Length: 114
Length: 110
Figure 1 (cartoon, rainbow over the protein chains, first blue to last red):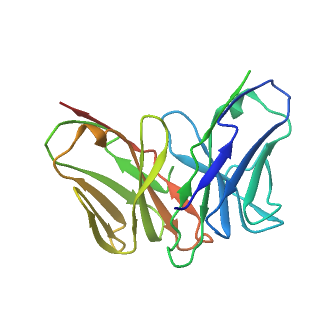
Figure 2 (figure 1 turned 180 degrees about the vertical axis):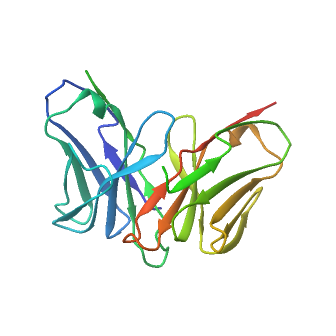
């Protein structure tokens, strides 16, 4: 079965510190995404990638960087974490092929910035 | 978001009853996905739709691209149906970007 795994699942970070959220997929999908969810709201796209060594900006990229070193791995980097970046972050993959653009999500990473 | 409006925002159902959730789109939409986020926070894909209707057990979903809306019908609601339902629209004119609604929070009561 398709699998997207995220780490860490939960993290407390200090304001101004660096945070790296990692995502690994075994779906053999070309597309990977990072979404942010704030309490009581839907998901908003931060960055995405459709091929290794390339990333694209989503709808809310400010304050975030992304890295796609291989097809399987996609990281989200907060160089200087801020209080406003407290949220749950979801990674997803899709292949835009046989299964269309169906999104497969990881379990989420809860980030608290203090 | 502005591109996808879900209604209602919250809903309480008695076990065994039926209901419908709706999404209206302000963007040209090629496909629609429905997700259930369970109380632990996990997101499960329920449907992936091109224009038309799909059914899976007690759930049925329709996507009408001409009138820019999608519905999710829940029949014979069960306690395990509780959670937040999200719809997501794939934009025709925005590099196939996917936009999410803010969700419908459903509570099924015994």
